[in-house]
Image (spheres, rainbow, N blue to C red):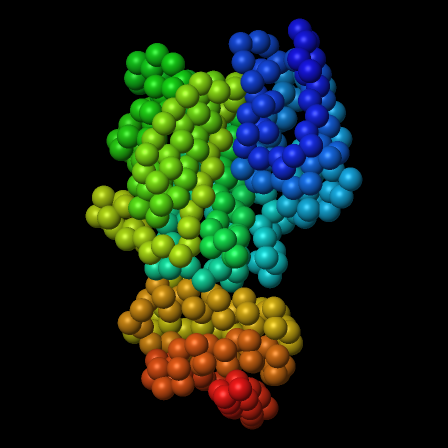
Length: 398
């Protein structure tokens, strides 16, 4: 229901980008309402692509005097795990925990918070999904660029702007969702400082062109353009919402249309993890420095995987699976590098952990190929015996 001063809406389907747009259509061409009521009680599932922009919208409305009332789903456990409910209520989201299978939505307003959030997201991704070469670098580059745009462009000079980011892994679908959102001045207002921009649709179309920026001293204008190239190279999707316009890029095809009124800018990407991305081609021939790779590669170009640095306990299959997935990602990124799995500082591992971490990798690669490339170092007698036993058991036919 929309009236002159209040908006009241009920949702009974999964809450995603289209649900968010339904809310914003009631805001177009009018001042913020005195009250907004959202009934999500019958929502069975929700997506970060809809809820993270909703967080920005609610922050914007609350700052402009709108009284917001939200009825949450009966089972709101995931809304709390993801940090959505906390941020919608004006509270702090849970901190990222790289041992978990998800990254709660993160709020940031400076470079230190941005870096911590991006690093946590990349670490979780590396443990949860086996990615094709170039994917990890693409995610890191895109997240850094889009999140940094919020700090640089979303506010007036000297103004502190709050941004939100979330990365959601979908291992079974072999894809990830990336969402970055803010409730700042928006793309058109930012570009209008140095360009003639007739409307929001033209602003979004202009913003994804390489070299277009409000201020050359602030940035080179490659963040959105590079993100579009990465998404197009992988056959993914990108959506930008700002002002009353929405821009979509699907499999390299771009379209824009008038939509609801969105404060600030919200950007979401769907990126397949099974498609190899040549990041140098996607980024005009200049590959980014891979912090993910280089933190594990020594001066002799050998991958050094220090098990003690990766977890606090080594007694369960879940931890073993996460470490195996991360090591697989490193080996795919550095396909010619030798690997040292270093157990220094680890006193004990369970057979389940060892089977999931090492034995399954031996079988997957083949015994000869594994030991031709991988060395296992600094194991005590008990760990060596455990590894030998699980590798033999896993290698036996039937």
